[in-house]
Structure formats: C-alpha cells, structure tokens
Amino acid sequence: MAKVADVDGLAPKAIENEVESSDGVDKGSGGGVRLKKELSLMNGVAIIVGVIVGSGIFVSPSLALKHAGSKGMALIVWVLSGFLSMIGALCYAELGTMIPKSGGDYAYIGEAFGSLPAFLYLWVALFILVPTGNAITALTFAENILKPLWPVCNPPVVAVNLIAASITCFLTLINCYNVKWVTRVQDSFTAAKVLALLVTFFASLVYLFSGHTENLQYMMEKTTTDPGEIAIAFYTGLFSYSGWNYLNFVTEELKDPYKNLPRAICISMPVVTLVYTLTNVAYFAVLSSDEILSSSAVAVTFSEKILKMMSWIMPLFVALCTFGSLNGAIYTSSRLFFVGARNGHLPLAISLIDIKRLTPVPSLIFMCLVTLLLLLSNDIEALMVYVTAVEALFTLCSVTGLLWMRYTRPRLQRPIRVSLVLPAIFLITCTFIVICSCFKYPKHVGIGVAFIALGVPIYMIFIKWQNKPNWILTACNSFNLACSKLFLCLPEDCKEL
Image 1 (cartoon, helix red, strand yellow):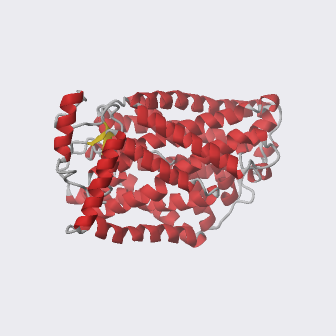
Image 2 (cartoon, one colour):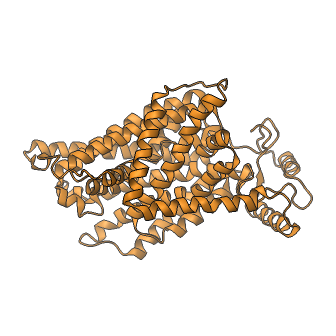
Image 3 (spheres, helix red, strand yellow):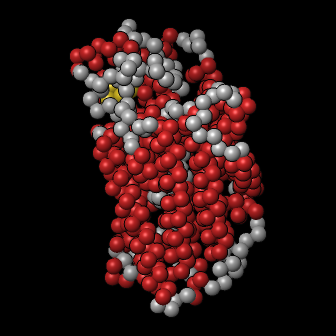
C-alpha cells in the first residue's frame, strides 16, 4: 500500500504533464488531471435522497417491527431515526464546510485525530461499510424483481446473486464511463422513487377510507421493553437512513460547497423522514403485524393485498428505488477510496483517473470486485447489524472530532457552526445504541471491532514503515504502472489539496 514516488524512473507529476500536453485533457490550476466540479444543488439533493431511499425502506419495516414489538413503537423508531440522522447531517454540514475535502469521515477523522484513525476508517469502509451496503441494496433489488415469478416461495439463491452481480457491474460501468450519465440517472430515479412511495401512501388512504382500520388498532400492544431489542430496532431504522453523509464524500466535485452542502442536507433530510414515515404508515394500515413479520418483501406483500391486478407495479417501484440508491452509493463511495489512495493510504493505482473521461476507474472497479465477493452472503439482517454497528463507531468518532477541533482549532473558518447541543445529543444517543447492541449481538459487534483492530498492524507495515525492502517497492511500482497502462489513467495532481 505504499505510495509510489517513481514509476519506471518517471514521476507521476511528469507523466501527467507529458500526457496532458499531448492529449489536451482538462487541467486543474496545478497542471494535473482533476475531477471536475459538476454537481449542482439539485444534484446534491438527488444524491442524498437517492442514496438513502433504497433497500432499507423495503427490508427494514419487518425487522424494525420484529425488534420494536409493536407498530406504534416501530413508527416511533422510524421518526426518531430520521431526527437523529438529521442531527448527524447538520454536524457533518459543519465538518464539510470547515474541511471542504472529498472523503467524508476519512477526511474529518484525519484532520482531528491523525493518520492512523483515518486509515482505520478507510480500512473498514473498504471491506465492510461500503461493499456491504451495496451488496444489501443489490440483493434487495434482485429479490424484489424476482418475487413475482416465485409468489409463494423465495427466489432461488443463484438467480438472486446473479441479478445482483449483474446490476452492480452495469452501474459500475456507467460510473466509469461518464459522470453526467451518473447524475442524470440519479436525478431521474430519485424523482421516480419519491413518487412511487407517495403512491404507496395514497393507495393506503383509499384502503383506510373504505373502512379497513383494524390494522391501526392497538398500535402499542406488545411493545418491547428490552433495551437491546430497542437498540437493534434503531439499527434497522438508522440503516435505512444511512447515506446522509455520502454527499460529503464528493465535496470537491460540488459547486459552491459552502452553500450547497448544507442546503442539500436541509432539503433532503426532512423529505426522506416524511416519505419514510408515510410509507410505514401505509404498510401498517394495510398489513397486519403477522403479515409484515412473515414477509421478506413487505412492498410486494403490500401490493398483492391492495393493488390486486396491478400488484406487478410494486416490484418495479422497488427496482427504481434500489437501482438509484446503488448508483448513488457507487458514485460517491468510489471517491472515498480514490482520496485515500491519493493520500498514500491505499495503492496508488486506486487514485488513478481516466484521462479521457476524468473518472476514477480503478477505484470503481476495485469496489465492484469487493461487493461481488460479499454478494455470496444472503443473510441481510446479519449484514445490516454488522455494518451499522461498525459505522456508528466511526460516526461517533467524526462527531467527537467536531467537538475536539472546536477546542484545539477555534480559529478555523466555520461557515456553518451548529449548537453544541446537537453533537451532544447525537453522541449520547449513538453511544447508548452501540452499548445496548453489544449485549444483544456481541458476536457481530465483536467481529467489527476485531476487524478494526486488524487494521493497526496493516497500517504499521504498509504505511508507517518507511524503509521497505526494494522488492516490495518494485512490486508496487510494477502494479501501479500496469494499472495506468491498462485503464489509460494518471494520478491526480495533489498540489492543491
């Protein structure tokens, strides 16, 4: 993972200038190949809403109800999860405008606590957070699109995995080819998925006004009092809202980030919370608790009961939501690994940019391969608890960094400055959820913590160790040179960063 300073005797900077002058590629002010600022405010809103509204709203309702015990408590969990996510997003708005770098948590943790904690986040994100979230979204897409063909049983695992892998590869290809295509797909599918969920809500109103109100009676009956169960219910809710920080991964590509980053957050988060609450009310009004708990595809069960002959439209809606969510996640998270490699925390090859399309092709392909490996696991609930527990730990670290930099760097420019009450509420609530989940699912949390700890010796060997043997440096040089020739990519000029 050493960053290579020389490839076949020619430094990356020299390679950049030589090829740029001959090919006419766009240059940054430092003379290097750079990612363009192509994201507007509406693109930012579409990314946040598009990434958040994905698999969670179709997977989590049954899991939230299972752990909350009652429909009323599950609905409270959904609303509070949105409120907590909104607080976290506002904290990240301060972080994102104070540290206007791509990479999100990676950049913020690095600024606050140094290189090792930043690498540990990158390490976990590379193999757990990002590919697991993408795998869950892809699997949900595949299961729902196949559900009409197997209405009384679960679709074959092989078919589900094949379709999930195919859609992952297809969207990776689009992201490699053109950023404008990505944003157009994101804008279109975001509008379509919000419309689809609103149709779900209004269909439930028609059902209620026809006299079917029995499923909304005794909403708080069987509510759980176990803190561990409530914590896991919040995990499922928070998983559905995960993605509110993804726009921070691409801050450098956002036009006027000081204004558009906080605006995008303040527009998108209330929209998502409202849409999620209305969708859950629709599910709870039409389906009984037993019907929700026994369904692996709640949206499809909902459509079969209320839409009758038009029930085929719901899998299409699910496909729209998960397709757009996966597309946004692939676009934003690839920039995280690109920035990490640019800073020397991953192989230099992952920081290469396609000289014709100005997209981080190696980063996208690497992330696609890791996601394909995780598609071999079909236990969505276990994956959800696993990824949310680990993500919560690093989100806590980022928000703690915000408070720490208030103390250590008080004169740092802060275009947005949130009240200290907000990060305090976020820290206390998330700490409670993480601690309670440790008692309920110690194995999942333990594996996550162990994987984080494994990153420490990796960092010491590949990053901290300066005097590496020549054979390691030669191997790294050869690998990076091969990738640059294979993908026709160059390293980005880091002078401005």
